[in-house]
Each structure stands twice: as structure tokens, then as C-alpha cells.
Length: 171
Image 1 (cartoon, rainbow, N blue to C red):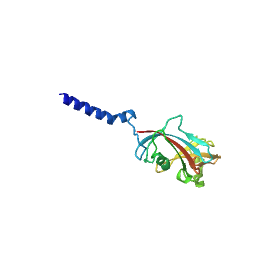
Image 2 (cartoon, helix red, strand yellow):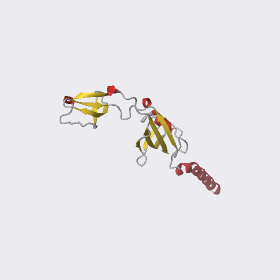
Image 3 (cartoon, rainbow, N blue to C red):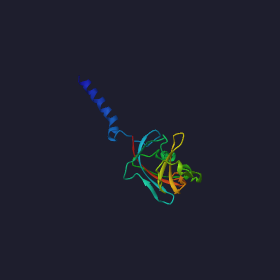
Image 4 (cartoon, one colour):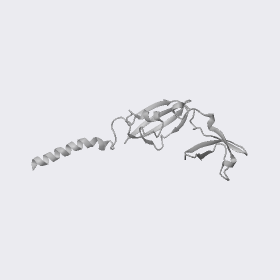
């Protein structure tokens, strides 16, 4: 009986040693982030001139699975190898981010193609859906009695970007 109790105690102690790191770390990973990991990060996005464009710091962190392509590929890849609490700064050229600014994406739409009663204002964001069901976000850049002119470029088109990324958690 004593031998059986000793064996159970030894097995319990062994299991506790295996499980303790997971319990203490909140069941997360202790190693560096790798492809396929679900991660939480804070980021700050800077434009080439150093202007801070946006940040998640002070707000909700960004959560994603590395390699699923939810965000810019270079952004996701930059998280690989980071450990929680570590930060990395990366530069992404415009062509690899949101593309170069394309003048062909600035075009006019006849007012008779607009919904009745819709009075667009310069600077307003409008949405359109094509035959394939894709939704396009555009900014109104000019308004006349006959037509409106919209810009379908991303607001970050043509911009070289710098991200500062802090890995918070690996789940």
C-alpha cells in the first residue's frame, strides 16, 4: 500500500513539473513566435517622414494567426522569432504594402448612377459594390452638378511604412 501511494505521489509530482510551466505562463508558449501561432501584438505605424499614422498602444491589441494572410505579409513575418515582451521595427516599401498611387483609380461617376437623395461631400468615404460582390471603399475628391469624382486608392497607397511591433502574447 505504501509503495502504491509513493508511486502515485511520484507520478503526481512528475505531472506537476510538466504542467507547471504552462500554468504559470497562462497556457501560452514560452518560445519565440512561429508560423501558425495565434498572437496578440501592439503596433505603431509611421510614415516615411516619421509621422505616426496610427497605433494600437493604449487600445485593443491586434490578434491574428501568423501566416494566414490577414495583414501585410512582411508585418506577419516580422513577428516570427519574437518572444512576448520583445519589440521589432520594420520598414515596408510602398510596392510591398498598399501599392503605388494609381491615377487610374481616380474617376468620375455620373450623378444619375447614385442613389436618390444621396448628396456626397468632398472628403466623405463612400462604398460601391461590383458585379462580383467586391466592396470598394472610395473617397469623394470633387463634386459637381453632373458628377462626382472619387479616389479608390488606399489612403496609404504610395507610402513607405515603418511598423514598430511588440509581441504581447502567444496563444
